[in-house]
Amino acid sequence: MDAYDWSPPAPGRIVSGPSALDSLPGLLSELDLARVVLVTSPSMARSPVFAMARERAGDHVVHATVAPHSPMADVRTLRDLAVATGAGGYVALGGSSVIDTVKAAVWLDLGTTRRRSVAIPAMFGGAEVTSRAGVTDEGRKVGIGDERIVPDVVVLDPRVPAALPSRLTRVSVANALAHCVEGLVGTGRSPLSDAFYLRSLALIRDGVDRLDDRHGALSAFQSAAVLAALPRVRMAAAHAIVHVLAPVLGVPHAVAHGVVCRTVMSYTAPAVPDRHALIAEALRAPAALDGVTAVLDRLGVPRGLCAAGVDRGQLPLVADALLESGVPGNPRPIGGREDLLRILDRAWTGELPRTW
Picture 1: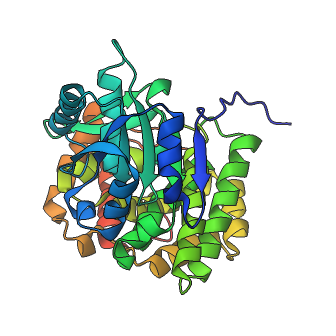
Picture 2: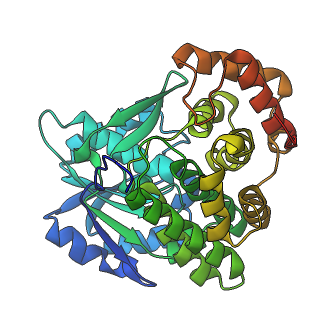
């Protein structure tokens, strides 16, 4: 048996179902939250599902200015609103930026109090079940980590992602897929974490196969995102690159994950043939890269960053920022700037060489 040291997922409650949002009043009562700040993004604030959340949130105030990549200035504004209005906690409805903004706001107050939170995800990044939050401060990505920022309750209702454009939600599945692909080859993997990732891949495959049944597919993707985010396996080069590339070049996080995941997977393949065999089996594909490419194509994720509007001339900025923080670890080591630029250039074109 493999030796491993595995930490179980952080505690929290998950409520899922086709009308799970209707349980919000009871959940807030159980958390003893008489007043909350209802947090979302400007686009989500205009959706009918946000109006539904307002009807069910009881006594609340609204903070609807969350921007992509969770700027720290907005986090502080949110925390100050909670203090000024006497809110005991937050309800986050939206994508990972909304949820991370709330988690960071909870973190700001940990020295004096702990505000409770409920996460209602609209996308598939998995932030709703992790003990980390990614924020940007003066254009740089900053990680915050603490068990106490994990949302107390997660509400998975397919009506929430269904309120967004179909293309947007489909592309978001690349977040969960990237977690699985890197988690299965990452440092600290174990038979226990494998079970989460492989089941998540199967749910992603099933969701892609039933895209015509939108609510059914979204339910599968919601569960897949949670399963992909729960294991505590250290991610490798693809995640490190995305966390620099997305905020520096303004690429949507899910698009960056889909493109870079596939490229780094190709680069890493010679070092982990047994792990890629597991991925291929879970996706019912002849080869892991074929299966991942087919899923990303069905989801509408572009194969290259060029299709996402990235200026090829800016790629060295990403490489330099990565080198400044240290060359990311990877099952197949990355030698330095030259290797990083090769990977970034392939991610830009979307073309994968037979050999690296």
